[in-house]
Structures are given as structure tokens and as C-alpha cells.
Amino acid sequence: MTEESVRALLEEAGARVASRGGRTDNYGAPREFSFEVRALFPSGLGLQLTARQYNYRDPWEAGGRVNDLVDVALLRDGAYSPLPRGYEWFQGRDEEEGVDEETLRAIIAVVRDLNPKIFKLQELTGDF
Figure 1: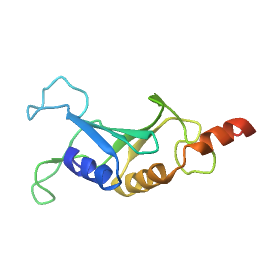
Figure 2 (figure 1 turned 135 degrees about the vertical axis):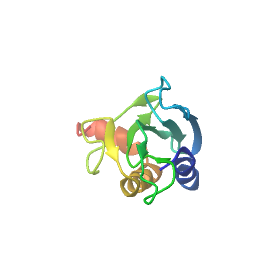
Figure 3 (figure 1 turned 90 degrees about the vertical axis):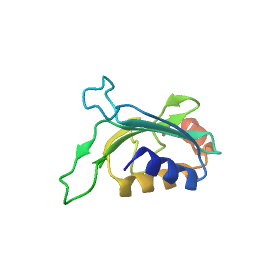
């Protein structure tokens, strides 16, 4: 995954997206992440994706640097939040670490389609 490919995934899902690169082409750059992408969906829910470090491929596998895994945090009302009960991710925590592209696509679909009123409902019933 690259900064551009993650941005494209989120934009295709209907989110407003902003991103920034961390490391430069120089391996000794002081930043601790490769790139960070934030997305805000029309529902008001957001995702913050951080790629911690690049994996370097041998020339016969792929060209350049790639990120196989990213860390994903769920944002609600500008703060980190778990998902309501009944979902596979963000249960009792606000960040999923080591997420591959297939799982990222599934998380994006869940957050995109989630009605934020379910948070209030589960808060009222004591399930959240």
C-alpha cells in the first residue's frame, strides 16, 4: 500500500481525505512513520491510517518501497472511539494494528455504511 493507493480507496468510498508523508527517500529521516492518511465520511465518522515503516523488496518481488500493513484508528467527534458491539473490529479498543489491504477495505466499508445513531442507541441501552 502507498499513500496514494490508500487515499484512492478512501476517496472511492466517499470520504474527504488528507494525507502526509513521513519519511523521505533518505532512510535516516527522523520521522517514525511512512505516511499518515485521515478520512472523514459524510456520517461524521473518520479513520486515521498510519503506515509505520516501509518494507524493502528484493528486485524480483516488487519495485521500490511498500507498506504491507497499516495501523487504523476510528475517529468519532474528533476523538478516538471503539465501534459499537457486533462488529469484528474496534471492540474495546480504538485502534487496529497490522491491518492488511483486504481487511482495510472491509473496515472502510463498515465505517462508511455505519449509521452513527447506533452509538447513541447502544449508549442508552448500556451496551456501549
